Length: 89
Image 1 (cartoon, rainbow, N blue to C red):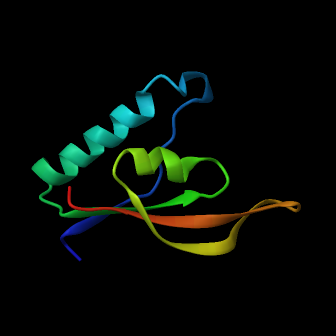
Image 2: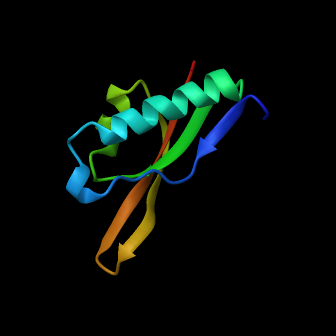
């Protein structure tokens, strides 16, 4: 498992969304993982229903699975957890 890493938390402040900050963070994460850590792939789990699949998809990530209704945000708000991978770096 030494050839891959996991991104656990990546967020931007809502007031800065849509300005390219998140994309820049993901590109720099990718560069560090590849060039400095020698990794071959990255994994992450994203909250479904937020458009994150499309955001990460534009940056080269692909969905590899889902855990249906894994995230309960409130009694009436349950979301899928979307499993994604970025390879090759």
